[in-house]
Length: 639
Ligand SMILES: *[C@@H]1O[C@H](CO)[C@@H](O)[C@H](O)[C@H]1NC(C)=O
Ligand SMILES: *[C@@H]1O[C@H](CO)[C@@H](O)[C@H](O)[C@H]1NC(C)=O
Ligand SMILES: *[C@@H]1O[C@H](CO)[C@@H](O)[C@H](O)[C@H]1NC(C)=O
Ligand SMILES: *[C@@H]1O[C@H](CO)[C@@H](O)[C@H](O)[C@H]1NC(C)=O
Image (cartoon, rainbow, N blue to C red):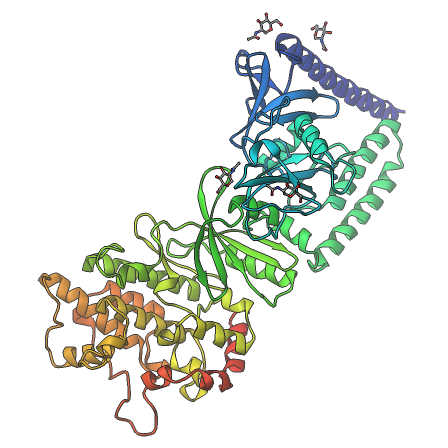
């Protein structure tokens, strides 16, 4: 009796607490609505979470601010401007039209926007059938079913077309370039007429807003929302099913409390056991599903971009920065205005899952002297990597420059750059949980930021091309020959290891000190033809390095760079210092440095000199078998 009474009492207490909370919240909402509803033109009663700029502080949510100009309500979004046509508070949808496309006006969008709106405030998916209208500018008449001419923008010389489709157009005919795109509603036909597209552009598109999802994303959690269901926020650590079980669990507890039944002592343990078994199973299960993997790792993963977004970011690959062995690099701009570099990979032999695993490895690498991977794109065979943009380009532009084309550095600055680069490589070798061999250290892969801080680029990419032939031909193509360690060329020189990168770094140091490529073709006749051997003789004979106009301190720095460089390019990998030791040598005093043994065996009869091997035709490279060994030890170093 006593037990039942107390149980009834707790039920009553719970209910009154719940209803109290419920009532106060709805009252508060009502209060907010009454106080803060304003209108602008056709949009009446603008209320929570939306607010007008002119509303008193405290109304609505600052994230959902609208402005009112000449009786038109305007949403400013991703630096575009959109007229608000309608707000549905029950469906949580706001319909907007680009200001340049509203009314009957014929023009280009004010701002390009892709269909996958990338914004936590408007993340809710409204209609999966949404399409995009892309505007392109062509220098000749195109007769293609999908291409609809925009009469008011076309002339005799240039033809502007609008194309409606679910995807961005990835292959434009030759004389065309992409201008911008904007989401539109579905026309219901494959190739809508120009009039239809015009009307769709005029009527705008829907954005789904959800305050709950916004708060959920802001707290670092995942929000689940679709066109027909209410948004649901769940914790990053647990997955959706666990969240569902927790939900059932809590509602069962409330239900049983309300019933006031003893049976709860039986059901709860059962539910608990089911819950624990499930939890055990899910933790034991290997993470095989890429999407799940991505959700879990979201906090450190580079951002995943769709191919459409890559097209929008790079303005349809308009600004090419360079061409490397792995693909072309384009400059791009994110919606927040920051610049980035997009590397479009060609012919990667990896599957999507392997690619994403690899990218997540590279994405975890954060160091002041290593280029940061910000994002990636993997859609079918389309693979791209998004990096931070380095305004001062690569080191070769500066150290090999004839006067005028690049900055020429003081010896102090060269030393700083050498040390920074060594620290970057050291981090790749030792700093993270797995050793990352670069295999392609050379001035082109050392990028300089706005303060001329060096950053190692292109690491980890060798892994995407594990086949021996590819690797060699790629390197040969990129003119990397002068930097390859001898053991990468022929197995006679030993196994491939971290010391191979040290070799390449040594060549780089000597080039920085020499201010030119080590084997400079035009100087073949002079005694300086091969800089490392020339500098070795000079230093061992105690002669000066023939540097014009330099101070005492600078001579010391130059000698130091040369000695460290000569240590690194020893033919025997075991004679080379580790990169950690190299950092110490560069930081330390020149008095602690000893002269290395002569790094080449030009007089030794049983071997060719490295130079000869390196200037040999590439046939020997392709025949070499050492690459099996290379990719083997390379792979094992990741474990
Ligand atoms: C706006 O609110 C007022 C009262 O606050 C109400 O009378 C009016 O019908 C509302 N208008 C719309 C379009 O909901
Ligand atoms: C806005 O509308 C109000 C009444 O609806 C009108 O009095 C006013 O002149 C309009 N303002 C502009 C700039 O059109
Ligand atoms: C299209 O390109 C031509 C030539 O590049 C240019 O003159 C014209 O202004 C462009 N049209 C638009 C609408 O951008
Ligand atoms: C472009 O092609 C269409 C039909 O394909 C034709 O009617 C039109 O006159 C052509 N315009 C120009 C400027 O050549």
